[in-house]
Length: 133
Image 1 (cartoon, helix red, strand yellow):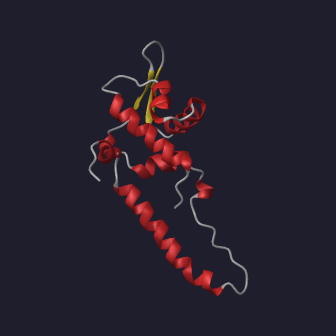
Image 2 (tube, one colour):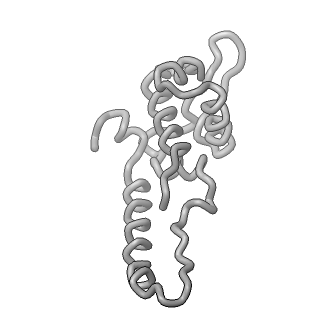
């Protein structure tokens, strides 16, 4: 599994929203400023998070975003998967003739990817917010 900048920024945004919501919507401009992320880029990420049911939006004065579910039930893997391109998730393992050493290490890199994915599935948004790592 490959974790892109999009995935890392999405996790940062979700942590920020979780920490600052206190039952009220968090404006994206505030998240962008605190996390030093471009607002337009953040809007794209949050749009994907919303589409995947991880955040809800509130319009109007005092509007912004809130978590759609319990942070203790939202895995970091869900957040990363919501924004990352699935075609980028796997390591490319197509090699030509004569690259035996690379072929022999394929299982190693596949296993590393599986372990990263397993770990991200085991860590929740609440774990990050409450510093339980």
